[in-house]
Length: 345
Image (cartoon, rainbow, N blue to C red):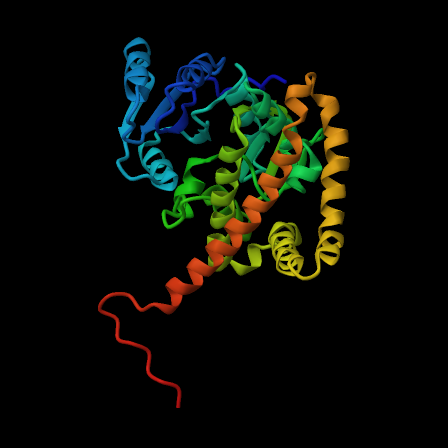
């Protein structure tokens, strides 16, 4: 895919990249952005007070290419970093790129060409996972499976379509500022929440699978589980802010965790009944593993698939319930200085 040149070749585009403790991946991420065929870039890297060599690597690149600008965010919050980048943006369009990913040379040009059509509030592409360990390769395959990620079509779509959410999307800068940017109360799922607000205003989001970002996924199952717990907590926070943002697919994993928890409670006195309760999910994992292993070459890779599926589903579902409970408790506890609620009549 190539972008239409038109009369916009000199129009500035802002790329923003939050980065914290990414010394293993940041070099390749920076190089892929600076190697874009679209040359008129303002490249804002928001460095998150890293404790490794991330900042020095960015500074080395900045010394080589004046398009690189560095901001510092001492707060461990991605939404804050994104808003710092948005505030500094001088371009008409904003493209977000993740610090542990790489993009092809025409990535920016292709996204901006679709935004210039005037139809879309945001545009994004596919986000296939990249694994470098046996478990990582299994995780990448699981994240491209419908069984693994459900209706998150940016993992596996083959034709362009309108969606409710984009991974690392591209947007008009003025539109992002008009809606107030990313919600800094959120520590995860801030991108979905932004897309929800854009859609609530009538904005349409385009997923173009010809545009691809190679995203380095987690490389171990425990790391994957922790990531999905965080995702689930973030979804709960968004659900409390926007109850109508929840769809049927968002409650599948929480329902699974509730069901598995009930089976665990029954297991002591009724082990046979508990086994019957969990058997449909076990069978689903087995079938999905058999189907997904075709994408993997080595036995050392596919043996991680069942655990990867379970980590995603159980982690997300547990995170959702945990986040929901935490959010509801916060609503019940009055803030410092607030008067306690009067007793009911």
